Image (cartoon, rainbow, N blue to C red):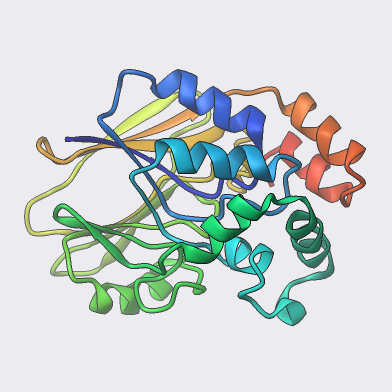
Length: 246
């Protein structure tokens, strides 16, 4: 089975459409690690795409915030402004969809989907020492997660936990063979707001039969997404950060 794994769409229609075009005919099922909305200017488009195309979706913290399920007091001012704006834009049907999304980890075949850590859906896994504890909560050999907007992840062997680096900027894809005896936390990266220094939209394709994850990057109309954010009156930083993937 070939799975298109996406995460952190963040209402970026231009990035999402570029990923959909690039991944066409390369997968059998679409799975999402959460944060359909927040930050970007097209929340309804992102939710409607997920409703129509995704077989499994776990909720992200911005999905909870827009749906009124999250206390916004711990959000920074920019994120809070975007969450409040998003909540006002969503149709009743899309708002209901976000409210009904399950929390991770969510089992799929012989692996799992999560937004943050398998231990806590809101926990960031950015470094190997953070991932070390998270591996203890996994109930399968592979868990896909998002939240950090950093493509890559972590591999646990008998000896240690080591990071899986993102593909070099010169490449559009890198294959990872899942080694027998190792356990994996795999981050497909962010479709709509990468923060690993590469502005291209990120995703992954997992061939569960072959045990291969392919990390992908694809360029998209950044200027178009920026223009929509600014036209919506959202904080300018949400537009400017798309330029360099920070």
